[in-house]
Image (cartoon, rainbow, N blue to C red; front, side, top):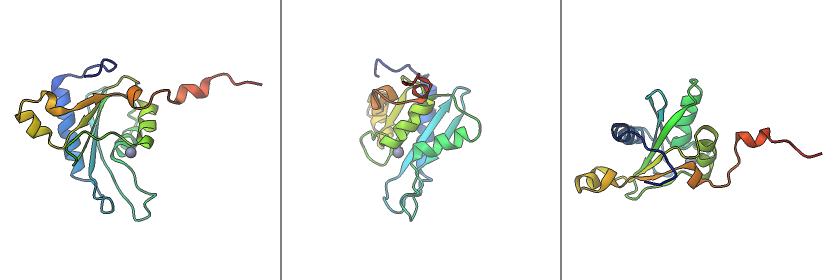
Length: 157
Ligand SMILES: [Zn+2]
């Protein structure tokens, strides 16, 4: 675990990872064939899932992470305690740059982001702690970032 993130309860960790795997099942990725599932844990303990949804125009594609945020925020939920992301790749895969900026908009810089390897269950069975989940934060993924508070800064002239 990174020193710069807070911790979530072990049962929340397990159910958030499980939800990310469930979300991945609904990925619509006929162009990249790269399935991604994301799950957001809210401060009330609810989990909101998202999958990547691609489009024939390509530009209309949205990532799993942003799907989850758009679902949450459009339902009035803006307060989160953790995010989990999983793909079909055996190693932990990190959010793209655009998603990092969206995470930055709604999450504390030290909120845990769980990057889940596709072989999580196998690693758990082998006794690897947390199934090999890499825990990071948006502070680590997007250092020196631009955020909402920057728009409040006094301007010159
Ligand atoms: Zn993305």
